[in-house]
Amino acid sequence: MRKSKSKSKLKKRQIGHGVSEQPPAKKLRGRAASISIAVGRNVSIPTDVVIDIMSFLPPRDLLHTAFASKALRNAVTTTMVLKSAIMTGSPSVQKTMGDIRQLMSSRAIQAPSPLRLLRLACGTRCEICCVTAMKSTSKGLGMFVCWKCVNQGHFRHWNSQWPHHQASMHKFDALFDHPRVAFHQPRSVMYMPSKPMRDASGESIGPIVTFFDVKKMVAHSHGFSAYIANYLYAPTPSVYDDFKSAIIEVDTIKRERASREAMQRRIPSVSVPKYKMIKKMLHKLAKLIDEPFREAALTRKFTTDAGTPNTMYPMIQMHVSFVDVLLRPYIIEPSSMKKKIRKKIATKINEIFRVILEKDFISLSFLSTDDLFERRLKDYFRDKFGNMKDLIEFGEKQDQVDVYSRVDSDFILHVREDNFVAALLELNGDFHTPLLMPDIRALSASLPSYSQLSRKNYQNSFSRYVWSTEMLKICSPDRSWEEMFRYAFTSSRKLIQLVWPALREYEDWLDEQSSIEDKAMFLYDDKRTFILQQTYRNENNLSLLARRDFVSLYKHQCDYKHEIQYW
Image 1: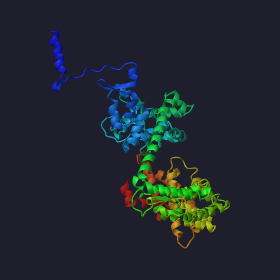
Image 2 (image 1 turned 45 degrees about the vertical axis):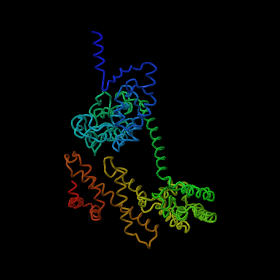
Image 3 (image 1 turned 180 degrees about the vertical axis):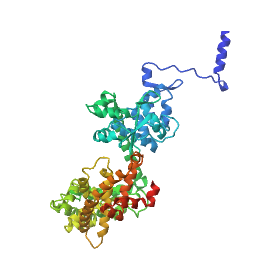
């Protein structure tokens, strides 16, 4: 009976064509388990090799591989997941990793384990309802949460318009500005978890500070950080060091890979001989250019035509426009560069750059502190450039797909003729609204933090509109740059002094006219911002604003068709 039983077992193990199945592999124990991982029957691979292979897998393949066995699951590291997600992940995965990176740098969420980080890189659904499809994590939460689950009790919203918030505004604002306080803020309302969150595996996830901790932290006498450390038992900084070191390593790998790919893309094998000739030509030219501006004069970049067999377009473009004009024919045909021509070009470059040094343009000593316009210019440009290279890079401007410096023939002509203010304005083009910001900041010093007028974007937008409006009034080819800019500066300051206080009064008037129910609306702050922005973008509105006729002004704004459609 025993023989027949063993034969029946053997028949059960037999498969097609009489080949018997291999017996099960023995588990690796002791030292053998620490240096190899079993991946099949009687098949094992060294651990170092497995880790190297897994580090090159995309996030989804890495997840499937990790959950094939416990040994592979334990081999997953934070560096491996970050490298897989950042280097090979989709845009949505990279967006998720960017949000996690920002929250981890401020230590605002629970530190995720490598497997938790891998699940985030591969996540596609809400972690609470497991139904709603999502492409990336909810910003500020470090987890996948759909809008429906946010509003169903798992999260609570905090409104800065609440009376108790307004009563201790500086304390609550300081709390929400604390780096370890995370929240989801789609508009003007902040959403926070109502209690500490855990995922299906029991791991702590999401923000450290919850909704019900806000009032306790404000009332705590020893500060926010002490409350987080002593009462919330938040992870210590050493817990986040593993993630920080992994990010540094991945960033280094990414930069090296990007530089290699850029070099391979810019210098195809077809153009290598020509590029070597250009490089040799520029190397010989650099020896003839004076040291103070050698590096700045020969700064260059590859063009979109690099590597094409077409000889009508240059392979590289010099950053300084007048240097590019001098060298362009010889970059197209480097063999035509002779010793005599090289000396002539170097002399020309040295002469032009020497003019800038001899005139002492970089020190800005030509600007007076007595004149308000020149004093503002000096304060703005003082730290912008300290040497010739900084001057070249500061004067960059974008022209379609090409980026080149404003240190061109017009700039050099202004410097030669001692028109230093015009040369300085030439560097920054027609965008000089920072000259008006001190006036706006002085008028906004007493504004509360919840005011729209205290926001930097609003102030920049307002100064940009005022400056462009005044420039259009005097802009003419017969006028000099300095004359136009002085007029725009003076008239813009007068207009700001007149309109900005009226805007403050108009904002207060809007708050008084709105009921308490309107202020509690989700879109109230956005509507008020939209109305205030449309106020200064129309000359008729500005005249009504200057007269403080707020009723007619609001009625005139509501008559706009696009404003009615927007709301």
